[in-house]
Length: 445
Ligand code: TRP
Image (cartoon, rainbow, N blue to C red; front, side, top):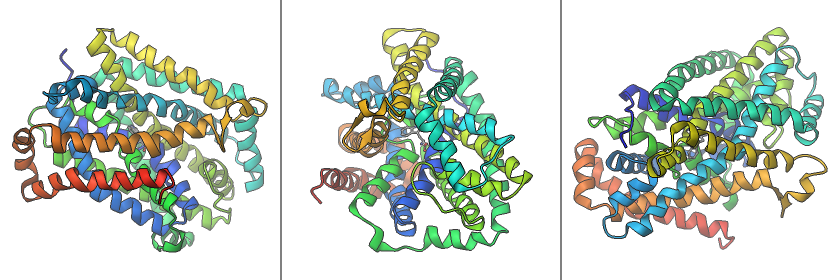
């Protein structure tokens, strides 16, 4: 099957749109808060630069050479053991799993856009009550907005790469950047800004537990959309003369910059308006609205703009999370795009109902295992387990399975002197880092 092609700018916007998501604006600040600030940020930045960047290039390369859905690309490029390696392509399932909670969170954001128009909570306590009421008691509101995000996402992907995904990113990404840049500039004029800088960049390594380390590495994959096949699937639609290294650079650069900018802005508002940086997933939903309240009407405007930006970031990522499996069913089973989009959409929408229920009083007791709800399990298993494994598979695949001559032919002219260090890192450093992550996960170290 022939794929519609991205334009070169369209590809960078779409890949950056995939990378810049809830992970940057919602998750990164709250895990930074949870795991102690500066030291965590440093581990994250180092992982992004040393490992993330090289896997990003590797993942693009598999798509660019394979030119098909993830499973077929793996098959095509592993001449000897295609039946084993094709399972690398099923990593794309991780995208559908992520969507189970991702779409629910986008639903919360829609809800907050609407309510912030006219209402902001007067204190953190009140804000906490609003959020927990929604989370623990309001099944129908969550279901309604989850259904809305399902509808939008499914509609866009059913329009295809050019008419749907590229177009969506073409409008939403610049809009997102303008909103964030404006709010960030305002934040730099406030007194809380220097405290935010201190919190994010002053490392206190005593806070760096091995769990913090695993979370930082897992998040580096998550935030760059790696290890699952999203970037690979987009790269399968790249024009032949595209430069993978330049594209990867822009994606990593935009993703990291936006995470840092969002974090600084958020912590500035929190410090400035004295609301405790409440820890955990409630950060942007609890502490932030209470801070905005103190700004009067400007606060309402800021709140709405912020949640709109967050929704944009979430939507452009979502389409990349479902597209790989959509592509798979189109390519391998000759499904129509509409049928494939609907089937994938219904999958995450349906399981999303259980993710919602796993936070609802009266139901959550049945959907909690260990200390985690179904919602938390999906989040944890995808970000900390599936994606690092996926990253490992891709590094090994490009490092050892695709014939070296083929890799060299494409990558050497683009990477020049950096080709050898890149190849070495893919072969040895990345697998080693992943190994450490696995050990740490199993509680061995
Ligand atoms: N990177 C996105 C974020 O930060 C999430 C995401 C989109 C993703 N596509 C992905 C994560 C593919 C892993 C793999 O929110």
